[in-house]
Image (cartoon, rainbow, N blue to C red; front, side, top):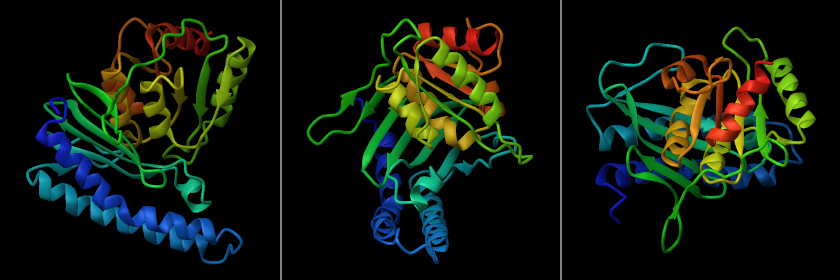
Length: 271
């Protein structure tokens, strides 16, 4: 299909091959929930295996690309931004809210993105300028952000993470939750930022608000939202009329939505 370039097609295939062990291991983890002993070690071993597979598979398709590291400056040349598994706690508990998230970055811009849930085999992908899609059996679904204009009756995910100093952002996010609920919005927390962003792109969620994410957790989702007609803002920016994706990636504080809801969420946060 015309919207699936050879680069994007290769990236999708590489991510799926690399994540195959997580699919098998997730089934085992579901069966082992009654036995806590050794469960975390099993999950950690599975994630390490996927990480090794990703580096190997991605290096095959784009051998000249470097690999960005969280909390370090991005490489100057073309590179991958890889989150081996977002939703680690869900994975270790047999909850199918998890994602392998991979983006490519060239000339300072995110150019392709894949978000893949190895537990459910949902696959979302995007390429700059060519739109965002969810994989289907016969045809792929073009993604569009929702058309809601008011926070009332909107479904918004609000999620906290631990920052690199070990500080939890939950109090900040709890304040945001309370403000959204006061406006009669519906708040959810699924424990996987990458999937939250993919669902905003698909119009299933009206907005995603998340603090203290790593760059790798949000890079692919940012492109999905942008290519679905959405708005990506830094949580604490005062003026919601313009985007600064570099600031979002640097801080890890993201608000993703359609233009109407996104601006209203920013106004709420900064009240």
